[in-house]
Image 1: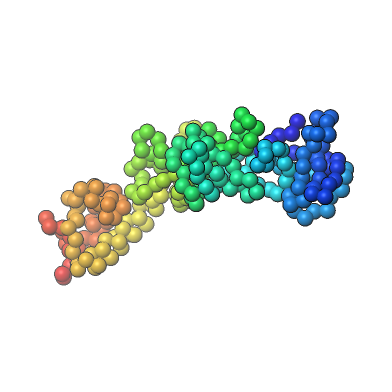
Image 2: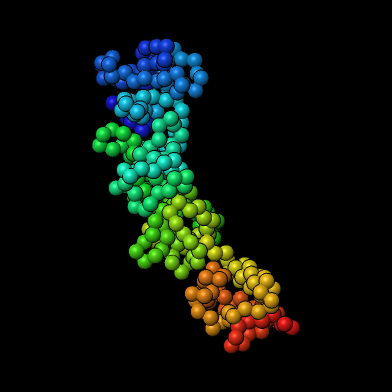
Length: 281
């Protein structure tokens, strides 16, 4: 039986001006699948040849074959670009002449035209290839990453506690705890991360932060730049609210206090009730 959304080993049984017909293995010629000339990759084919053909449905809902390799097959997760949206759903490019439909009921969040998202492909009740933003079920926890490794992840959702759900390499389950990030995170965002912890179930605990010493040095530099740009003073000190620190410096108050302490030890700044100043200002 032919499997839609996957590669099938099929034999060419007939040739026409517009393409080739592949044996659907049903014993009936009217079930043979068309391989259009435009989908042969320019290969010279003959009756009796066996080809590895990807099967999908055309605009008239007929099965059609291609030798082109799509960006993903069904039952896989892929990072795909949304090419259009409608009141009924959205369409994502999978590298073929027909885009994949993402029904509105399969969108856990709003999809924007031109943006890319992690999507899980499946065959719907009508036999067509479709996609969903519900990818967590397809994520693996069997990566070979270790604590300290640098990885690339794609945001695909949020837990009820505000932690970010991330697909590392688009296939391994990861999480960024709420207290580990201080910038905007949205589904589809691709972020550079570091493995901070590996949970008992294999899930990767991730952080966008650098190592503590490196991050403090970077924050010290940012504070000095901010002071220089603002006439050598600012209204922020180690008593400022966490909200203000996050808004201005995209950091936690604890990291900010440590950086201020480092600058004071170096004799570069002074603090008082009004804020912080560069020395000799």
